[in-house]
Length: 347
Length: 275
Image 1 (cartoon, chains in turn blue, purple):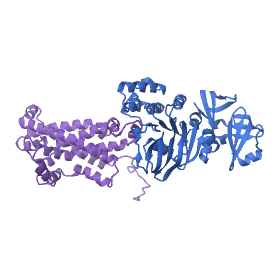
Image 2 (image 1 turned 30 degrees about the vertical axis):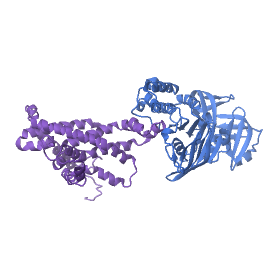
Image 3 (image 1 turned 60 degrees about the vertical axis):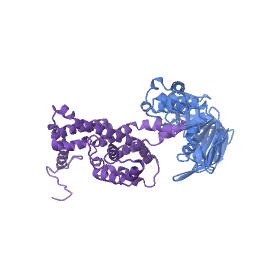
Image 4 (image 1 turned 180 degrees about the vertical axis):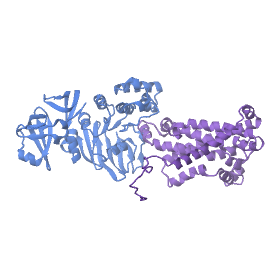
């Protein structure tokens, strides 16, 4: 069963035109720079906006077809949404926010609350907060409540707009696993965060200027991102490791020095262009230097993307000229260096 | 020396600290405040405190009180039933001439009540635009009846409710309605379980304002519904009549109406009186 989006929406100043996009039953990340239509796409799938033209099909049912005059309203679509600004009901207690969808589906108050309590436990919201109003919660807690609320009516499609943007670090890992095992057939993540893509998504859709620039599995789209923004975004290195103070030990045994202190299991991210390559062991201020085996060089215009193996699988972007000057070719051993300040630690 | 740039500032001509007011402005301001407070003081110093219970217990006063309560509560109910849909239409529907429609809704707030009463007479009177059909088809005649008083009071009070509720709807936006829709709530469920509870403070404020306005209504009621004891003679009309024959009664009723107005203000304190 797939979700088929083949339509057009007109917004003041720009147009979203998506032709024949089929989204499989999986976790799909929709990425793109600001204002490229990610949220608009999500709103159309949810039924909050109508297509100007074209059609939208969810699991074999046409839910929007401008020409045929078909439009299934949002409340009959079984598409859940976690909004970027959460949109919790301020007049309801936390537990009743989560129970809201169940109540609308006909569950009685007690059953709805019991299920809501289970979900709140799974998203790790402290039971002390269940009877409070959402206004008194922290941004991270609010986001978790919003996720629990969207999951409660067991939607076929779950759209999460910037899923982990405001979650405090302690909750990110558990939320990631929760979204990963979500019962929804389709999970659509609208995201700005390379870590979300690397850790959650199996497929990626890249939007650029209101159109699909690239799509496919994460590996496919990373290899052929379709636009400059996505090349940088998906080129970002996301490396798991264990942090202790400002040292992070990666899987291959290499220890990376980072600027911020952290502890426990973390992801270290850095853009591909932050990596510098040398033929000889460099002497400089960069805290992280290691010898790496050069596996492959992909030339794309003036940019060369170098894939390094060895203790750390890393992508490095250099100019094509540098690649020529350094005579980079597979099999070579080069030195990679990385300033600690270029590394972001995500817990 | 008298140059407008005033570089050579001597003693006493030092530049004013920013934010300090000219003395004259302060004084006029206090005079204005006195203008607002003085009538209340006048009323209080003439208040026949000891005789208050017996005056307010007089049959005319009690009758006027009953009429006032019936009329003002019925008018408030009408404002809620009619005003809520109107507020939604104004806040949520795209209209062709929104500013004109909004001005029409607010007109009764600025219209002289006597004009309102006259207008109602020519619209709903026995020979009025709509009134003649009400009369010949249903045998309903509004002028000079309690129902007429309710119509007059509702006419002047409606904008207070609508404007208050519309502002709240506007401020709330439709973000929460959208969230409710993605959780399976249809239009009615969203209205009942999300929108109305969200704007509940504004509903209360609008109701209190409309009720206060309806309770105090004088001009439109007198013009459209007349002044019949037990039917259309409300407390404000009774006050005006009492002024001739029994000033103490006028003061007593005025005190009651003022107490009600104060109570409404206290109810609205957070919304209408900035801290």
